[in-house]
Amino acid sequence: MADTERHPFLQGLSKHRGAPPTVVVIFGASGDLTARKLIPAIYNLSFDNLLPADFHLVGYGRKPIPDEEFRGIAAAAVKEFSRREMDPEVWKRVAANTTYVSGGYDEKAGFDRLAAHIKDIEKGVGSEVQSLFYISTPPSVFFPIIQNLGASGLGGRYLGKPHHSKVIIEKPFGKDLDSAKALNAELRSVFQENQVYRIDHYLGKETVQDLLVQRFANSIFEPIWNRNYIDSVQITVAEDQGVGTRAGYYEQSGCLRDMIQNHTTQLLALTAMEPPGSFEAEALRDEKVKLLKAIEPVALGPDPDMARAQYAAGMIGGKKVPGYLEEKGIAPNSSTETYAALRLSINNWRWQGVPFYLRSGKRLPRRVSEIAIQFKRPPGTIFPQKEGFNLAANTLSFQIQPDEGLSLILNAKVPGLDTRTQPVKMSFRYATTFGSNTPEAYERLVLDAMIGDGTLFIRGDEAETSWALYTPVLNFWQSQGRKGVESYSAGAWGPEGGDQLLTSRGHVWRQP
Ligand SMILES: NC(=O)c1ccc[n+]([C@@H]2O[C@H](COP(=O)([O-])OP(=O)(O)OC[C@H]3O[C@@H](n4cnc5c(N)ncnc54)[C@H](OP(=O)(O)O)[C@@H]3O)[C@@H](O)[C@H]2O)c1
Image 1: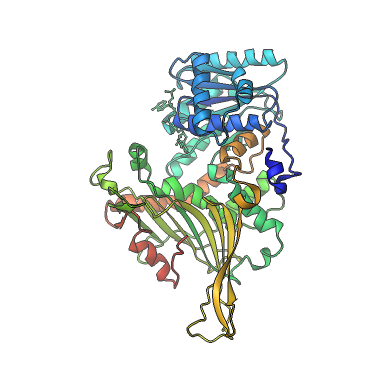
Image 2 (image 1 turned 60 degrees about the horizontal axis):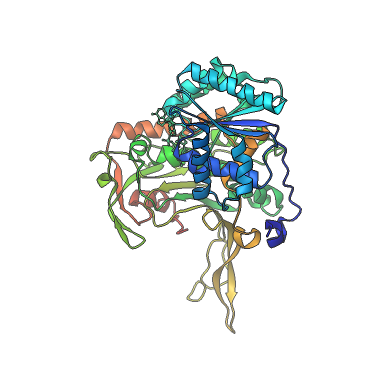
């Protein structure tokens, strides 16, 4: 049954967004992200008839892989990871135009072969074809790929036309302010800013986009979206998983770089920015940058605005799990944080005096991402402060994942002959209203890049502004070694220091 038949709310939504003839080239085509997200995204776009008629997929990597074998690898990825079961007819369409080119990332000859291959594809199509390069490799090879895209002429194809070359670059976008600046400089040596799509897949999530719709398509929120009515904001991005097999990467990264600098800060920017003049990419990104620039520097002490910790052994889902320092591949004296919390102040008319609390961590009780807007309590109350009168602060929460939706906590009268009150929750759930088979973030983002819509991507100055905020914290932590690294049991909601950031200001973390 079509999605629209099952869910009448979906009726009338346009399915056609018109990308020009395109060849998507994935660098790192044998990698984990390609298999789990990128190939399934392309398959599902094809399923929804959202790919252009002349769509080609080219894998690029160091290992020589025959075309047929690459198609087999890609088919297996769709079978294992796609949100929809594989429809052989749909896959046949994608597979017919899927090929592979092998070469090194620092080997100009490999990029020349790629350029010749794209020319052949173009000959077959019979018209100019847009190239979209997806850099899905470890960051150690970002630079040589960018340089070779420049040297081979691939980066500059059809400049001045809407179907000019485009490049999507995966995270992490640098590891501090200096490295982000260097990466931006490298990109600018080959590409113009409107050719570059820095990805943060959180922005492709339905609920993150819904945040914009809720804020700017409903007239009831804007008048109260400020310091006069809002008491504080909490943003949580929690994982129940430990470091797993990613020890090598995580030891170099830690929670602040891995989650706070990008995903959590993006949620903050969208929650707190001023209404943009339009829904155009630049208008929206200008507002995000303005907001990030208004955030006060993070106090490092004596009443610090941040806390960091590592998980110790504990219980998750009824199972005993080891502590971070006991995990395979982790240095026994590692100071890498698996939890970070921040208290941020935004120095502008809308938000002055409203604390924004951010936290993220591994081995927290459950996987959940949410933004909770806590409103001020009513001034005084006509209701007696006694048993039976349980009044909560109104809280609007956007649940980003899982169980995507929106809820509002209100106080209501408990039915009965005497007057008693109790907080109640009004909820909207995506899955109930629209069905649960919503597009994955990568589908939306790959399609947007093909169309040339950068709204849900990070602009260069935005990446730098975010790093400028967090780099002093990272430097401070590095200077302290293990001093100040707290511990929390796996399965707990973080360390004491994380709680103190709030209790010292009369707040407590919600249990999402
Ligand atoms: N996996 C995820 O869920 C995820 C999520 C968000 C962001 N990302 C980001 O997406 C990018 C790709 O992630 P991934 O997990 O797919 O990475 P990966 O599996 O480790 O690597 C992708 C491909 O890059 C090539 N490669 C690996 N190490 C290399 C090295 N040292 N030098 C040169 N080439 C190397 C390999 O391809 P060949 O050997 O065929 O050349 C490999 O198959 C990374 O920047 C990552 O941070 C990943």
